[in-house]
Image 1 (spheres, helix red, strand yellow):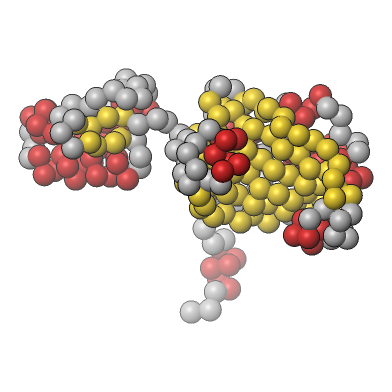
Image 2: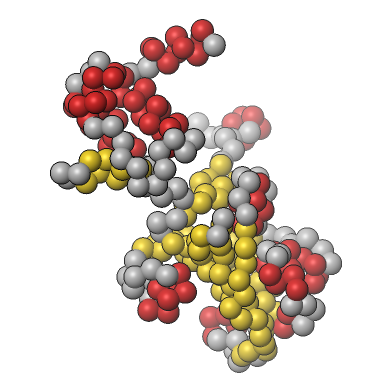
Length: 257
């Protein structure tokens, strides 16, 4: 403990301010919308200047943990659901968030057989207009609407999926169960977008609001595409993080200088 205290006191003052406020917000001591101490109060508490306090707050604002409003003060912002992408293995969104202790709910918008549009047909290697199944669901975390998923799968897989699991299982789990085998490779593309009129109604945001789109195509073990589509998240309630391994010792040895 003495070592931790010494390490903390050795840190720059702006860093100590960030850590104190960040910990208070994450621990719930400042709830959404609560006003934080003013710059003057923080400067007195940490025996520093308001300029140093502003430097600390700038980072927390960048992390979207706080929101500063001219003439009103600094406020704690809504917490965001985070799913972590670890490239060493794959976990569905539902598994990632449940592991953090949150309660996931899936609300089915539609699950039916339909004709494959051109882009979906190309992704699944079927004829344009051929039969596929489409799954549309809303994702809620701790009763808060976070995102919407729009998935397309091969008809032979959709025919094997019963209504019950649609309300509880991830798309990956549904398809794996239908195949009676784990999935193979996954391709992921991420982009920012603006909510269309339809999306604004589904996600309960204004038209044009920022959303995060993660497009996926899943393959079985023989490299056949079996599931494609996208998950779209509210920009104010979701973020994701990457975990990347460094180069292995073998790779380092084989690297060209």
